[in-house]
Length: 171
Image (cartoon, rainbow, N blue to C red; front, side, top):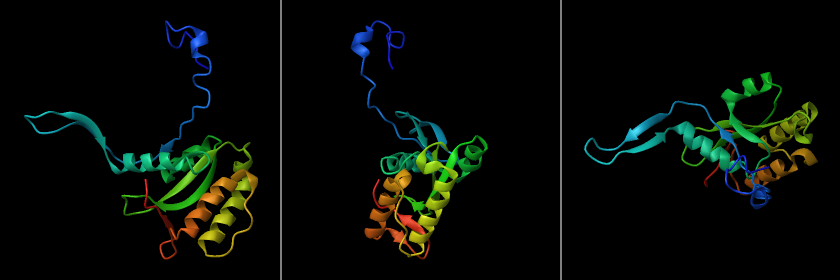
């Protein structure tokens, strides 16, 4: 909740409800980046950050509109588990503009219905069945929206069976 201590000079009543309904997606990827002023030696320079990790993190953030939880790549999984965060593999996904797919995971709290140990085990079996071409069992309430996303992708023909990855063509 925002209050006048957060934004000096604005009365509390003007700030009430301002942050209600605000949501943000988080996507994390790990790799080297290039950061600094860029441009010709005698021209206008612009500060920027470039790199595959930045592009992948941006694509993951975009996918948070379709999947539950914070989305991360493999380097974050062990660290998350060590801190008691539940991890659920969504699949190998090749996002637009990338050659190689990355294994993507959703993070959540073990107390959330879709992230309990048992739910993660059932989810993994469900994804494995789908990716092997078998009819997966019915989706569960805790992860049904994630399952619906993958089923939509399946119907759109976005699964590459030979490489066992999802090929996304839009941002």
